[in-house]
Image (tube, rainbow, N blue to C red):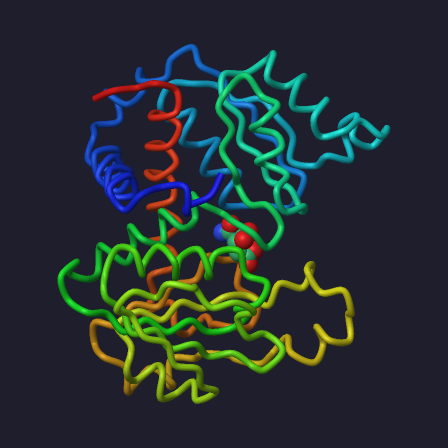
Length: 298
Ligand code: NCD
């Protein structure tokens, strides 16, 4: 449901299982979840999260049923989320749910007899994304060194950034630099920041030059009550290759994707671009989650 439900040790366990999934030969993996069915329930648009969960299930030998557009289901006739869950659970062994309402996945999990994985609930949580972000950060940095991590963009509505910050605080020492326009600043700072520190700035270039990790997010258009407010802030920050010339050579630029205008495609060919690595790592993270929650042991 939430990355905050996992202890640092449990997060570490999933990151290790992710590495094992990454290393394992595909013909061995193909039998791990044979006969199991994933119910894939997406009430909100998705490309990577849905397709990577479905690909993960198929690559572990399982099958997938579900929907990517709830307007083609009985939801359009007025059926409740709980009734939909109570139905799909009869056809599947595990559910993955994305929903625009915060708390929807938890409600589903409380009603469901089978495991439920939250694939994003409103602006609240997106725990499999947090795991793949942590995995990607772990690939490019030593756990023991203090990290300077900049977060750029929509810190207010993003469901990936605040949980990632809280997880990093629990796992390692960080200096956080938050770069956002006034309207998109993080609404709540973590109560316990441990030994980590926070700075807020609007100086994107300075943040790019100082950071080991830069995590950029899309302005979350669908969460704005006022479309004019979105128009005002939508192009607040945009990073191109020229702006990275003063970055540390090892700096890695992450983005959960989709990007709109935040990262120019000319960044893709620089050694900083890590966002398509995140896409790949997401398939291993989701294999680890499906395998574990379906009772698999290596
Ligand atoms: C993110 C999401 O849905 O929260 N995308 C994703 O799952 N990779 C980020 C976003 O939509 O901006």
